[in-house]
Image: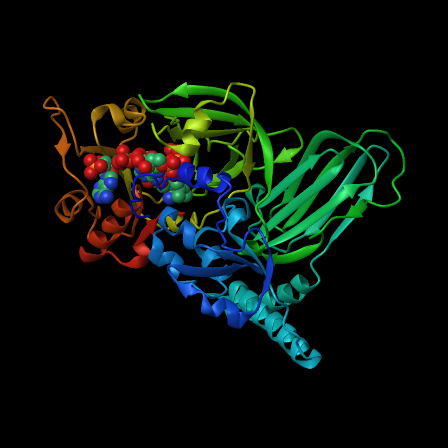
Length: 509
Ligand code: FAD
Ligand code: NAP
């Protein structure tokens, strides 16, 4: 993110797009753009970019781009789809850039044999990726098993059967570590959508059901064999001839990044103050939805703000920090808690703050790259958080203390501006008193004169003082999250202090 000039916020952009000004220079005409034509528009003052076959004139948007002009210029005059997907595929560019649409890319005539070769090559490439995904780090017999699994993947499919009252859809994933977080089901208004996450791939079952079902959906998982069952209750006990009409994307096994984000409407059931500017929002999933957000992952919220769809990421937390770890805590499977800072000039958070209890907001499927197994093999876990960068640490902290027996120490180093900004200070201090493995250090960058604790910004000297292994060779994992420069500087300081890339996890978009 770069600082934008005054008058260049997202709200200002939305206003400009609604002003009726001709932003493409084509007076509303849509044209077919050839590759040669696209390539000519590669300067800041004349910059076209293609995303998923549509060409946009992004010159008027340059100064409004939160990532800066240089980032946008990387795709100038070219197909920027991959770059866009890498950085922020969740941004709803169709809505944001609709007034900048120049037209479609002209379809190139391709000779049939070449098309087939490309197709085969693309499939082979995916196959190799899958092979790698399945076999990396495995011994020879495991590789054989993985290869057989791979063959299975090529024919990944589902089955269904019925009794008088139930419809059961069965998917044999052959994933040994299949669990409830990897299955996302939405069944509303006779439409069933079941997505199974398999590494970086996604398998989808999506049909308009033959008959009505009740809102109760059950998901059963046989973890050892990777069998997933989605169980629906028939509304009338009649016999179904088919499961239903397949929708687009039904029965497909594709990369997660190629699957569009799916949203469902959730009800705001409570909103409580955490600090002077931060609130805990509790959202309720609709009946018929099975969705558990894994530790370290975020969701996207979508709202329509003055006619434009705006999407922002948020990291679910727990309703509070559990102090007792007798049993692993379970998601209730119904509520999602979000700790959100309301910025006085924030476009999205101001609109969020206006939501009333009982209002609805769209919530996406989870995303993110955190791998819990990194924690499961660590002896020391160090969490560096800046402001609301605390949010991914909440579930992580709970998971570490409740479920990872090899962890000897867990330390949170929490950077804030003032004492009033510290989120859940009381709960953190209580936890530190209760659990001797856990320690918390608050560091303030703009304290009042009464503050007797540590003062400063993230720096090499502060980190060398607080980030330490409990034993000389202990296995450490350091997680960091906060404002982008905070995270980037922190990672650099840690590397300068000798920590390896594998020992650091930075939460980013
Ligand atoms: P904008 O309209 O974008 O900005 C208005 C002003 O607010 C800015 O000029 C600036 O002064 C301030 N501001 C806005 N965004 C930031 C920022 N990111 N850092 C510092 N100042 C800013 N936020 C939470 O509160 N809770 C979360 O759980 C959370 N999870 C996130 C997870 C991910 C993966 C990422 C990338 C971000 C997360 N955020 C979270 C930030 C969130 O997505 C928004 O950026 C934030 O809510 C501001 O949105 P806005 O539209 O209100 O502000
Ligand atoms: P904030 O209150 O502005 O800042 C928190 C602390 O970080 C303060 O001590 C602040 O010191 C310091 N800081 C801010 N900018 C810094 C910089 N450039 N270099 C060094 N230190 C800096 O933070 P916030 O408003 O809560 O914002 C939290 C951030 O976390 C947001 O940017 C949000 O997007 C991000 N976040 C990311 C994720 C994720 O998963 N990726 C999840 C949640 C939140 P100063 O006095 O210097 O400002």
